[in-house]
Length: 322
Figure 1 (cartoon, rainbow, N blue to C red):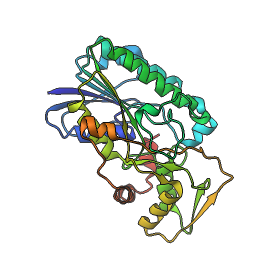
Figure 2: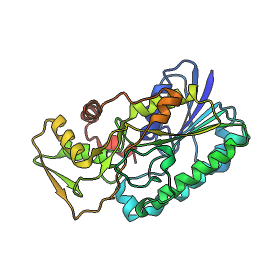
Figure 3: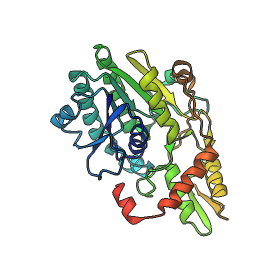
């Protein structure tokens, strides 16, 4: 019976990971929440309320744990990245520093961290793990430098030979339980909400030319499951994405088409956007772990729309996500 601690279990990725791993009878899941309420899960999930910025709390919850999956973060959408770039820095640096130290001191066997791709340079070509140049675009400086710091201290602790570390640089994740509140959501969640609430027209910020790599959340969950069993070395960085480039314009057209709503799309070039092109080369993950994405973008959009309709725009549900 492996004891797995999931930090950030009430968040978007955390909830999907918790619900999936709790199906495995060989896992004892310890789910960490902070401000949000616990939700209904299988019987092998034990809930812990903890402030991950508190070293004692972190030390207590990591005792007697085999695997820590660190999905907790202070996050928000592009709006805050542009207007308040500092909001992603302090809390994330503090909580991850304490978690990594406690994993080492408590002899946790495996630490898994979902990083991201904002430290990569903008590129029309598929980006591999060794394309990190250190030149982070200005609007991503805060969050990008923080992610790099966390990756580096993870590498340091891995060199001490106690805990294995997996760094997952994932692309834009989407799907059920994401943020769909327009003030906090990323581009995919915001577009779904706008489309589902629109009557005649979809207004999109920017000209839609930027390209992104979108990965359905089930594919990220499968990556985490595979890394638990197959990573051999003490420290690895893996890209995790669809490996396909899609423009924001094409994404919007796809969502409108699959929603079956007769909407006109209007692109507003005067609204703030982040000029950044990114899609991932994930050959390393396929070679080392045998992982590759399975959910095509059309299927992922259909699944997400179906889930959105089921939840609808429920005020109680979305207040819980804040």
